[in-house]
Amino acid sequence: MKPRIPITFPPTSTRPISDCKYCLGVESPIILYNVSRNDFEAYAYTSKPIVVKGAFSNWPAFHHFNFTFFKNLYDQTEDSYRSVDDECQFLHFKSDFISLRDVFSMNPARINNEPGTKSWYVGWGNCHSEILKQIRQYHPKPHFLPEDCEIPSKEYIFMGYDDGATMHLDFISRLMWQAQLKGTKTWVLKPSPECEDICKTITFLVEPGDGVLVDTRVWYHGTSILGGEFSLSIQSEYG
Image (cartoon, rainbow, N blue to C red; front, side, top):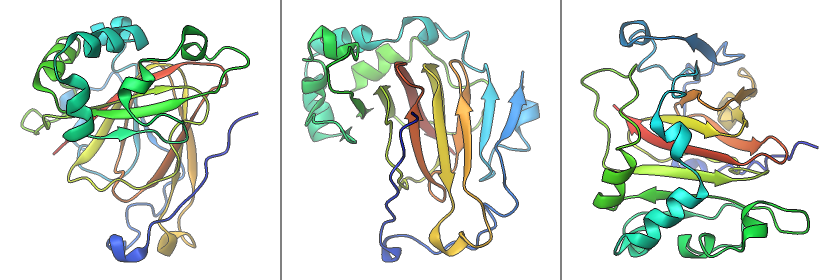
């Protein structure tokens, strides 16, 4: 049975009230295939959700990134765990982990989500310059993004099983892109409370190699993973 995504709205005082133009008439994401930078230009700064099919299937990251890759990278890089704890961010979601070091200390059975073990899903920000340097050797800036757009010195990794990310809103300064590298992920986008009467909640699948672009500053969003599959994605911003 597909896991349900709990919905929690932050207090209205913590976010601006929307005029609902971002969600009006949206019933599904815009789907793009073999998109070039010129083709993408018309969509680059819209708040409409977009899925770019197969955009990242040729990245070296598509073939090399997995649990062991990141465990070895963090174990072998000085101050990498401290950087997440002190300078960046660790997202435990519904798991029982309190740090990235806890995640990479799991026993093999739980890593692989074997029967009788507790499912897990986490995310974390990469602020460590050497970690970023190593990771970005395996992927360029998405080829369809505007040439002059800025990419921050920070990326997020999300990995795990089942429940995925609980419904939330991001307080970030730019638009978001995410590369789905392993596993099939279900996204649920929900309009803000003041727009619920005129806009729809939408649900869509993102498959390995796909790119997803959502204005997560205005769309409440949550994810779940296709039963039994391991999901791994990387995320950053552009603007």
